[in-house]
Amino acid sequence: MINEAKIKAVFNQFVTTSKFVNCKELVSGHINNTYLIETKEKPFYVLQQINHAVFKDVPNLTNNKVKVTAHLQKNSSYKSLEFVPAKSNKYYYKDSNGNYWNLMIFIDDSVTFEIVPTKEIAVEAGKIFGEFLNATANFDASNLVETIPDFHNMAFRYQQFDDALLNATEERKELAKNQIKRALDLKEEMLILQHLKSEGKLKTCVTHNDTKVSNALFTKQGKGLCVIDLDTVMPGIVHFDFGDAIRTICTTAKEDETDLTKVTFNLENYKGFTEGFLSEIKESISSFEASYLPLGAKAITFIMGLRMLTDFLNNDVYYKTSYPLHNLDRVKNQLKLIEEMEKVFEQMKMIVSQYLV
Ligand code: GN1
Ligand code: MG
Image 1 (cartoon, rainbow, N blue to C red):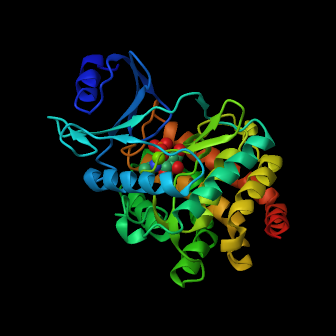
Image 2 (image 1 turned 135 degrees about the vertical axis):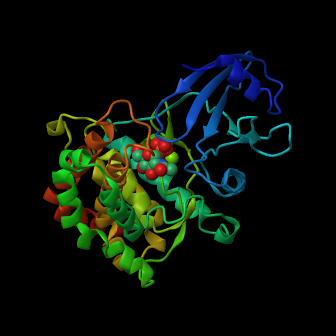
C-alpha cells in the first residue's frame, strides 16, 4: 500500500512549483521504490526512495548521477535524466526515518519493453546503449564514487555464494541443489573475463552496469529516447553493458517466468542489438575485446543467476520478492537462458565479427 500523504510530503521537500495531484507506484525495479507523481500541470515527476541497505552512500550516489546527467546533456545526442534539487539545496532529501529520496522529471510519451518485440527495437537499444559508452568515454572516472564496489566482480560474487552456502538452511540447499551444482560447474568459464580484466587485457571505462532493456526509454515510434537508472554508473568493462542488454533483449520470457519452455534465445534480436551497439563503439573496441562480447552475455546472465541464488540461500534479503520461491524461480530462468545461449554460442561469435567490419 502506498502512503500518499507521505509521498506528497516528500515531494514537497523538493524545489518545484508544481501542485501534487496523486501518485502511482512504478513496480519494475528490484531494489528502490519508485513513484510517478502526477501534478496539476506537466511535467510529472518520478520520485525514488533509494534502498540504502544496497546503496550505502546515497549522498555520493546522488552526486554521481547529477554529474553524469550534466555530462550527458553536453555529450549525448539522446535525452538525459534531469534531477530536481531538494529545498536543502542537495539533490536528495533525507526524511525523519533516515530514508533517502531523489526526484527526477518524468519523461513523457515514452515506452519501455520487458520483452523486445522486434529486431528494430533491438537495433535502437544497441545504438542508445552504445552511444552511452561513447558519451561517457571522456568523463573523468575519478569523479565517480563506486556506488556498489565489486558489483560485477565474478570472484567476489562466488565468494558471497560460498559464504551463503556455509550459512544456508538444509532445506534451501536441497531446494536449490541442481542450481548450486550448475553454478559450481560453470565456475572456471565464468571467471575468464575477470581474469582478463585483472591482467589489463580488457580495458575499463565508464559503463552503465545495469543495461537491462527496461532501462532504456523509447519513443512511441520505437526510436531510442533516453537511458535511465544511473545508479550503477561506474568504471567497468563494456562486455557487461553489452551482455546485460542481450540478457534482456534476446530472452523470450520475463526474468521470473516459471514455464522454462518459454525461455528461449531470440537470435534476430541478438543480430539487431549487436548491429546497433557495434555501429557505435567499433572504433573503440579491439577485435580481441570484441571476441569476448558473447561471453559477456553469458557471464552477466550467470552473475544475475548467481546473485539471485546467493540471495535465496541467504533467505531473500536483497532483491524484492513476491512469493517464497521467487528468487529460486529467477535463478532457474537465468540458467535456462544460459543453456539457450550455449546452443547458439558459435553463431553469437560470428555475428559479432560480422558487425565489427
Ligand atoms: C536490480 O532494481 P533494478 O531492477 O534496477 C539489480 C541489477 C539486476 C536487476 C535484475 C543495484 O536492478 O543488478 O540486473 O535487478 N541492481 C542492483 O533485474 O543490484
Ligand atoms: Mg538498477
